[in-house]
Image (cartoon, rainbow, N blue to C red; front, side):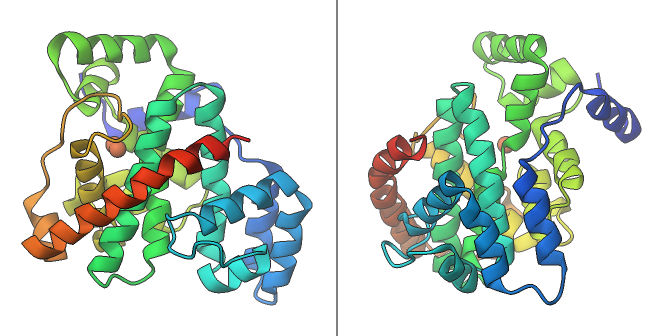
Length: 282
Ligand SMILES: [Fe+2]
Ligand SMILES: [Fe+2]
């Protein structure tokens, strides 16, 4: 079964309750859109929510971003990382909360693993804004969360197919729903007005050649997804290691020694990730 894009769109829009983001996200977006907003205005807004600012700082100071222990307040985070990254982090904390509240721990670890790996690849390949690529990695499988929450019966059938026929999540979703989590991610990105640099990797991480606006970040998230699966960190929903798209791989020009370095660094960072993960929900 395969639906055309219009049908998919209607189907997604008919879903009862696409998650709305916390009110603060709208306010932050509004502030960021105004040209005379200072980092301090946005920081003040985030700081009003102590739990949120604590989480943003925890992520920023984790091994994930490579500034361990050096960023002590939200204004500093905004100046160093930029508005878009901090906005992505606020969004990511909401998504993480959703995963935690439902007990999707494997997917939560997979997302953090992909974010870590994407950030390491971005740095090792001299890609601009590695923090942004990392946030794209955090969000890449958001569509899976929505499918599990909104379509629980279908999600059970998807799990069944994965177990009995060894399909990938992507293939099983296509068979049961006629669309997949990347498409759901695309609709969410539109609903949430995410910038192209985040929405392209979410939408095209399984088909990186289709990215028009952020091909490099999309290629990195695609490769990171595969590497983190191969390293066995977290659970993406199936136990398969996805094949890396050859064009995406060529675009990044990762030599064997660099790949070796990437794997060693990711391994090291993920070893510390358990601490980070166990502290995240508190
Ligand atoms: Fe995916
Ligand atoms: Fe994934």
